[in-house]
Image (cartoon, rainbow, N blue to C red; front, side, top):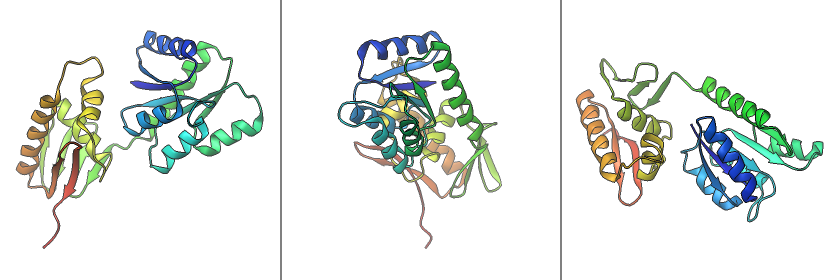
Length: 226
């Protein structure tokens, strides 16, 4: 599970990152609001720990822009402010939880577990796009009366594409989300699995296809009737 820490105090950011890594999370750090927003808009993070007071753009604005873009990544906001008005503003902006500094490591981890667990409980058992149905429990891809089982990486790639209908998913996003930050996988690994998926879509006779947008990434599109 990958977490983005958006915090401009280097020592605190490193401390949180080390804590998360000790508990088997993958953690990245962004030092200002614009960098944090750009990172979260990629869709590769499972949750964010977001400070309120940030250079460039405060945490309230970061989470507001995320929600306007339709990004539902769980956000835990951090602040030294103790006023009720600030907590209300954070939650109304779209944050999922609000933690006041100083906090204990155990409290931070418990909040993060609660947020990511709740996100998992909200996840649907099936993703759909056009005539396709991806069954998350079985890794089966179904089109009308035909079905095919996907490999784990095929399943994860297609799940990312179907989970963001109409949006372009870059090779970088796919590499980070499917292969992981420490992997030696390269662009051609993505291309090989995209080819596998295209063959399976053709086998199923689906009207959905994977379009390559040069220098950008991939997007699912449906054939137009007529």
